Length: 356
View 1 (cartoon, helix red, strand yellow):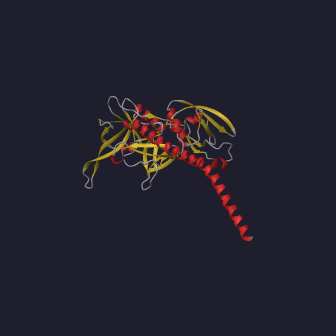
View 2: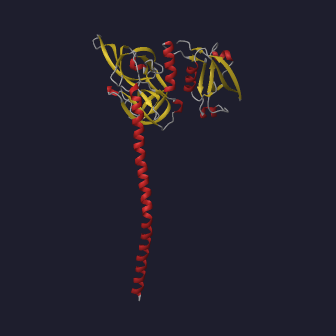
């Protein structure tokens, strides 16, 4: 009798397992289809991204040029000898204007520009600015390809980007990555600080300097400028909005004419604002006003906080600098200022920064 009960229990367990397996088997095609659809979706997305990278790269590459320079240097025995250098540049104007880095053409006695289509031109230096590491050179040619300039204010951390240049003389090299950070500052020389840079993990190598950093729309968002030696996956580009205003000044004047407000200031952070018990968490806190300067003439005072410049919110020193460059010397600008808890409005005329 006991064996019969065990047998019945065993039979019941077997039957239950068969039923459950049948139910799961019936559901399996749905799970399988879902898994297969997910794979197909991911596999389809990757080629779509690849196609987009290929498309925008092919559209921009013709406008990214190779720049070779010759400068005269002293050798070990103090004999003057020619030294060759290479870099990259971006044609941004049909008149033949090319953006590149100041350090690419610094001290060059001869500049040669080679397009990806094989055409070669003599380059003429229009102007250079060591503070931003930007320079403009010009070539005379017909049917020149030009790159579309984007808006670096719209760049967001995490978005895809593509670096195009000529590292180690290897023409039209394309690397892919993301925007790792914005607003970076790095010191490239003991007395040279580059500010408000775009950081990317797209490979930027020697010879890539002056090349293009673009988004997936094919717009230039930065001019490649620097790497940190011995650090992989860390490169930097000058925001294209800064490059635009610098290039405009270089073309017009041959140098960058920098407007100033005549103030010494501290950019606010939430921590600083909390320490000073301020009602705003951003802006430019005026530490002192230069006597006789534009701010002094307009009535600004120590302790004022500039929160807007011509209606644009000012959160960082870099934003203020770029806003000043865009406005230009001699232009009247409007400042929104917080003074003792109340918003006040000031109008002033920008003057050229005194030469040091």
